[in-house]
Image (cartoon, rainbow, N blue to C red; front, side, top):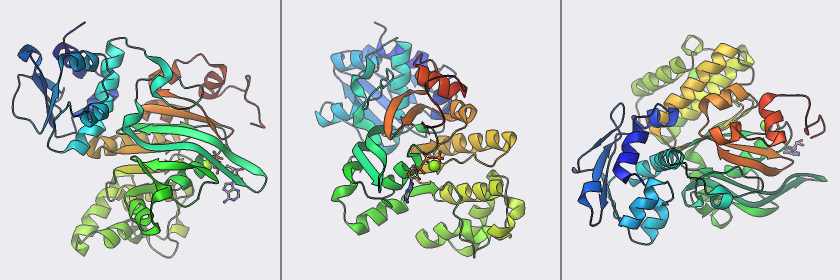
Length: 385
Ligand SMILES: Nc1ncnc2c1ncn2[C@@H]1O[C@H](COP(=O)(O)OP(=O)(O)OP(=O)(O)O)[C@@H](O)[C@H]1O
Ligand SMILES: [Mg+2]
């Protein structure tokens, strides 16, 4: 088996989108392998491409046993498991590291041809994936939700890996928006629970849930702008609520955000004066304005033309690259999904049909997934799904 250092160096110079994204993380990580100084090294994640150098002072230090180093080289090592067992020492911006770690580890696993199947993931029909449940930003366990006789979520077990852009796909009416409403605590489960970064919403006080919600950037399916406020005031709203920025600073941030979604020219318009696509883009600017570490976007592309949809994909990827965190994007747009997703989940009839790294899902031979990703009318999925 290749030494950890070589494996990491090889992966970091690859041109995968997820690896390219790592250069935006201003973090250095030192790996020390006990008893084997030749395998100890530092990864500089802020270089393009990321660099593996000799051991040098770093923001985060991981000390691995030789056995752990071997596991790390195949992507098997769960950082969280290592931390919990006391085998890995670290300091510095651990949050940031946790966000990049699944990407490196997933890439290492792929590089090593490691395939350990579904045992690290939750849910039925999971496509082989190396993402472990120790690093989930969001998890649902046995989530049930019915509206009257309409059973929408039927024991949904889903895990959204930390540090990824996860795209949630599924037929219309299958419960995607209902799932997001549970994540922000707007809807309560009939049974089961939702965990955000390991904390169950069930056990949180109302004020804790509200505090948590403030840290989540949400772009609703309909844009959900405040109709009595201009576009400027809508995007400025979270800054006024949650920061001490003065009005000049707020204007700078708002203009910058609106520019990134191509809406600067409409800054003084009222929501009623916008097209559907414009409302969505203003909603996205507002969702991103505080650079939250958790972002939920419900069909950010609906109502956008193909060029703006592609540009919106770039905005999401750039945002994620610059600020890390976890992004959940619900969409019906397969091209957009393929463009931005690290990880994909497919919902069907209120359950998780499949989940896995984007490339694995795209390569899946499962007929439903194939039909869904190809947008084909022939297949197991009909109008009544
Ligand atoms: N507040 C509510 N009260 C009653 N029924 C609801 C409510 N919210 C959603 N539903 C129902 O739950 C089901 C799932 O709705 P949801 O909005 O989650 O679908 P979706 O997967 O997001 O679909 P789409 O892709 O069309 O947006 C639908 O049958 C819908 O009518
Ligand atoms: Mg929806």
